[in-house]
Image (tube, rainbow, N blue to C red; front, side, top):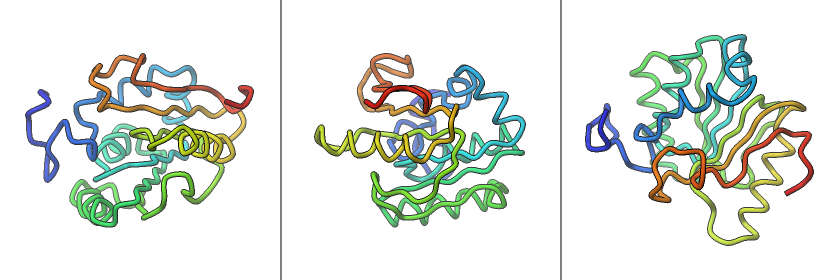
Length: 167
């Protein structure tokens, strides 16, 4: 798939879909994450946009549940329609929520797409993520718009396990 190819109602390469960022393969390469996803994990995506990445994950890991959060109501509406069309709305939910105040806890994997503006906002997000992920769970922050492609660095600003010391 090229970053110019159209994918459903979302154009690849847009922050809202992450289809130019091979998330399914990349997430599966994180230690222990694929095992959890295959068994039935709880996943949150912060800044999920139109939800295409979560929909792809839901398709790849049907035993897991996925929760997408974005501050843009139009993106969430679009994500809900797309997940219903893809036939995964039974295990994928979308909710409007501010970046550092997404709801819930007990997630096995949390990823945040795009970095909030400013150092303090990024720290608040990282703190919220660390409180919402289960012990031994994984999390990462990524910025596909950084211009470096899907390589783990420098796009991934911080990845870790809940047992890591505070950022």
